[in-house]
Each structure stands twice: as structure tokens, then as C-alpha cells.
Amino acid sequence: MRFIQYLLVVLMAFPATMMITGCGSGVTTQDATGGGTGPNPTDPGDDDPGDDDPGDPDPGSGDTTINDISIVTGSGTDVLALDPPVVDFGVVMPGETETYTFVVYNNGGAEALFTNDPPILLQLDPGASGWAVSDQPAATIGPDGGSINFTVSYTPEEVELSSATIFLDFEGIGELQFGVKAGIREEVYIFGNSLPILNGDSSPRPEDLTDFGEHSLKDRGGDTHMFNIQNLTGAEITVTDLSILLPEDNSTPAGSFELVEFNDDTAWSLPYVLSADSKATYKIEYTALKAGPVTATVRMTYTDATGTTYAYNYRILGTGLY
Image 1 (cartoon, helix red, strand yellow):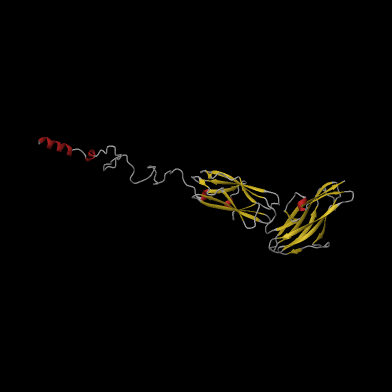
Image 2 (cartoon, rainbow, N blue to C red):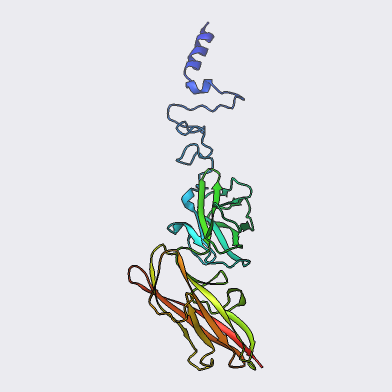
């Protein structure tokens, strides 16, 4: 009896924690002082107990938002910073091709995944044609400055204004889009053979009649070409001057190029008022007076409704043969 009483006294003297060993249970107990090596009860489910952001499986990777995506042209223009975000390919002649390369950067901390296949989508605006996307990129852009390239090309059948929209859609991030356009717009143009001769054009060619071709010196051969001034501004303009300027080095003989007619009148006078969306015609005659190529500059000046004066110049060419 005394032995049993002694045993009870000994057992009661040990701490309570020693009574629960949890052998093989996988459970580690804590005493009242908060000791032990178990999970932090204030951060349940966190794969990284040292992180202050509960539930983030990889807190070091960061995120990518739509603001982390940028689109830049090959010349360095930030496309999305344009107002509006439209890249102008200019006036492209029928049968010719204008090409732009675009670079898409991902400056975020996570990869950006395209949702479309192919990644870059092109939508033609009503009546548009000739636009194409090539060099489609991989479906993913890496983080922290990763980039991909793609190319947009335009090959028109006519010079009328044409446009399209480029779409980039990213999984969990959002969609970006920008426009592309090309062709003539609401300005003043000079046309030859129904093709626009751009202001400052210094490369004569037969297609737009700025190259008068080869003609015999023996019979003072030559040719007469007709050109149109087209006012597409939507407002009245006034043509104040139309003249032919010969090179200052006298390399082109006087009389090689002559203005011979304006609006079917051989005795015209300027200024001439050209109403909105209308045109005026004039003719230039080339006469072969010198062997080899000779050039001149056609200069037209006009004022708009605000009184602002503009100059329009292009080069013409003729070649004399023995």
C-alpha cells in the first residue's frame, strides 16, 4: 500500500507535457511559452513562412499588369503614347510595300501570355485591304524586360486612305490595341496619271508622268503631260503661283519645260480659287534641246482659309537623244 502511494506522488511531480509524446503522429506540441517548430498559426497555408504576404506561393516573382506592356516601333516611337495611338505609313504607291517592325516589351515581374493564336491579330477597317502581319512571335513574353518582334506591311492596290487595327490580348492582364493607316488624306495633292506626286518628290518616274521620257534632238521632239491639283481639305484654297524653276547651274536650257495650259486655258492668270473637293488641271510641255537628261522643279503655292501659305514642289525629267 505504501508503495502505491509513493508511486502516485512521483507521477504527479512530472510536468504535464511529458505525458503526451505523440509517437509517430506527426504532431509537434507547443507549451504555453510558444516554443516548438510547428507552422506559424498566424500565416496559414503560406508556402514561405518568412513572407509577410500570406498565401503568395512565389513572393519574389512579382506581377505584370497592362501598364507594364509597351509597344515601340523600330525607330523608337512609343506607339501607345501617340494621341491617338495610330502609326502612319504615309502614302504608299500601288504595287509598292511599306513595312514597319514593332517591338513589344514586358517590364513586369511575371511572364505575359498571349491568349490568341496567332498572337497578333489584325482587323481591317471597312473597305481596307493590303495590310498583313508577318513574323508572328512566340506565345509568351518573358518578364523583366523580355521582348518579342512582329512586322506589319502594307501593299496597296490604290492610293485611297486605308486603315486597320492591331490587337494584343494577354491572359490575366488585358488587351492592347493600336491603329495603322496609309494613303492620301484631307490635304492638297498634285496627281499625274491618277497617282499622287508627293510634295518634295525628287525622283521622276514614268508612272506619274514626272519623267517625260527620251526624245530626239534632231526634230526637237518632246511630249506634253497633264497634271491635276486636287483640293481634299474640305475647305477653299487659293492657288497663288504655278511655275517651273530651272537649275541654277544652267544645266537645263531655257525652254526645255514650259507650262502651256491651265484648266484648258492657254491664257490663264493667277490667283485661282479652288473650292473644296475639286481639282484644277495644267499641262507641261517638254522639248528636247540638249543631249542627255535635264531636270526642272515644278513649284505651286497656295493659301488656305486662314491665310497660311504653303509650297508644293516636285522634280520633272526629260532626256534628249541624238
